[in-house]
Length: 351
Ligand SMILES: [Zn+2]
Ligand SMILES: [Zn+2]
Image (cartoon, rainbow, N blue to C red; front, side, top):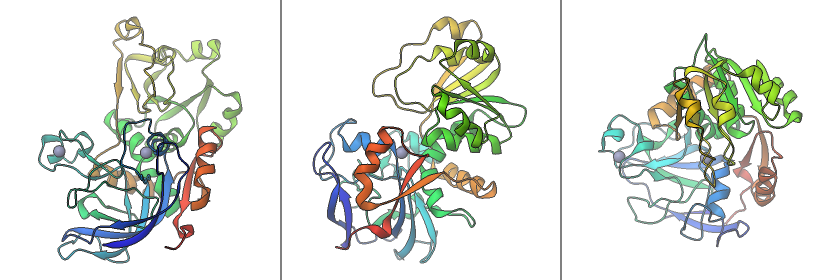
């Protein structure tokens, strides 16, 4: 076993604190990664607080992992010692179902194996996430960090980046398209950068007048305050696609009304309680579609990282030390971060 340290919750909602952790010895195709940075995703907080079901306690969150390869199994060939690599939301899947065969592991019919909240195949133990010094992952689920991408700013791309890139690709966002992005947070700000790099004209929707300047500074072509009925009226029937990144329950109809005929609105924020049901008339009268999307497969995630490197895209982040994680959770919940916290794992206490 490989001994390392972690920051764990010992029961739902309890503050995270140091917890010595053992990782499996590398199997033939495994990669042993010393974690350098780990982003803090809203999903981490939901899971730590027991809001997304029962967990194995102690519980270690973190699925936006960037690190350095320090050892490999005998048969591993995709990554070598010294390489900078990434691990996102998944560490394994069944490999044999139809979605897995086309590398859409996020839709694995047997359920993908989460970087946390999963069961490790070789050992039958729970999977533990990236708030730790070391992680051991099958090489097929390890991503290459392209040259030129800031490693800390790349960490959030492994969840927030791919979660927005995948639907933008799926709906062929590109030059000549007018799209909308709802919500200026970890996901929304990355979605804006990616959609712009794809060549689309981007309208940002926010409920907060104080975020208008922030959205413009990030490069939004237009910003609409969604609580202003006149501004929403002016935006009606103007967009080809809307990406809604907000996870708080909210009324979808005002955003559906901004779509042209045949437009699609895609949800990527998982709400704690259902959104109010959309008005069927809104869909029927303009043949609109309402869709959803979850993360992306490994091939597409690598494509996203390469795309971001090519276009100079990384997340905007605030670096925190490991012992600041509990405080960072409170700030994130209060919306006081621009736009992602990233943990500097060099600050992990020694064992
Ligand atoms: Zn996440
Ligand atoms: Zn599968």
